[in-house]
Length: 400
Image 1 (tube, rainbow, N blue to C red):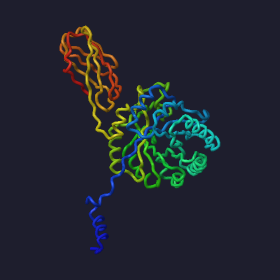
Image 2 (image 1 turned 45 degrees about the vertical axis):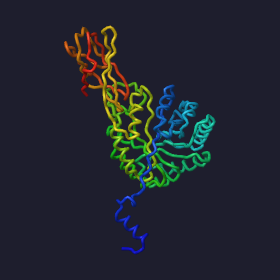
Image 3 (image 1 turned 90 degrees about the horizontal axis):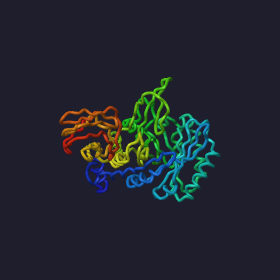
Image 4 (image 1 turned 45 degrees about the horizontal axis):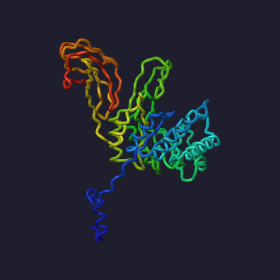
């Protein structure tokens, strides 16, 4: 046993790391950020921003993109509303992976004009993110592009990139990461879509590997949305996301599972990979988004709240005519239930709406689902109506 008291304390801390005096400091909480990816802002952004402000520190906003043939285009961002929000903003510039090359002169000009306009509008601009799905074979050139672009940015403006797990096997990755202040590892929609949108175990493995390569802070970009796969005559599926495609055929819906993401978030908070600074959620939902989690569900997952599903049947009546509605009173978006049964008295006529058909007997109305849609947490959907002498307000059953 070492005689020196300080060495003796060190020895015990190494040997008995579970003792309270030897426990490492707890990891800081993971920062939570949010992508805004609508190409044209709407009045609904105002309420969505207000409702998200308490839970997400930073907004990463699609601002500018370059595409083959189409060239450069700006997202129609409501800059006064973005300024009024008051949060730190990172402008995202999307450079399509199918571009034949990266034109530094043109990119520098476009970025400079964008930054000048946003700063003149009073937006609290803290950084620029380049979103470019570069092939691994072109990472060396991409790194040189980023170094030269960074030299043109205003002093103090941070530069980050969206990064792909496929780059982990490239010998050029460490140098690429040295060219930027931080990186955002995208772990959704990076594999063959037929294999699914997101794999939490694979995402965790990629994050662990990224933390061993990067010596700078990095973030994980996580999904809060879904897509649909449409069949194609060539065999490869076509992906339909925010914008509906004018194509026939049965759609296979893929939706990120909130419970899986909640579990992953808990793991990352408890045992974060090296250099992981936070999580960035894709994307801010607006009312009516067909393939995005509701903001209620997104906030619950980001906070690590327990996810709960619950239905309530509500009735409104006038002169014996009842409107019958379902209300999602949990914090989890849900598909409408398969069957809803109510106790009734002497119904003359009844009918289902919004994908429900009704079965009627002297004492019961049973509404059966014919087609499935999701109802957002806190949302409401009319499932039918009936003209009855009475419906028991508390006597109903919902079957998944």
